[in-house]
Image (tube, rainbow, N blue to C red):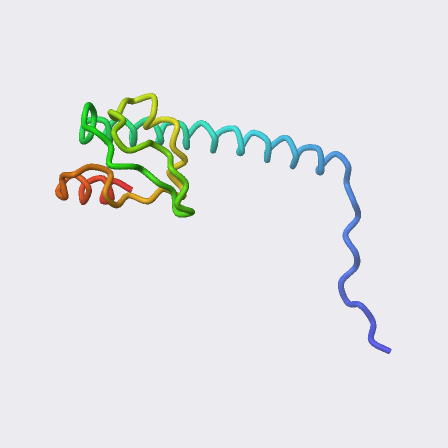
Length: 104
């Protein structure tokens, strides 16, 4: 019969609540940093395609995010979840499409 050489750690409620507080703080900081990064991405994308007409922006599941014929605005660029967006053929300008995909 094998003996357990490592004793089971004791549960410390104080340490647990401290861990939860630190985790919550880290999650809040992460959310804020993601928000700042998204705003910077949208700013750069708007400089690139702002005022241009969309050829249709889709996500990786072929769901339409910005309809074809719609002008790009900061508001509709902010509404996109960039974690699964398809950067191909946003505009009729191939150079702008290449630059948009490069920004991601």
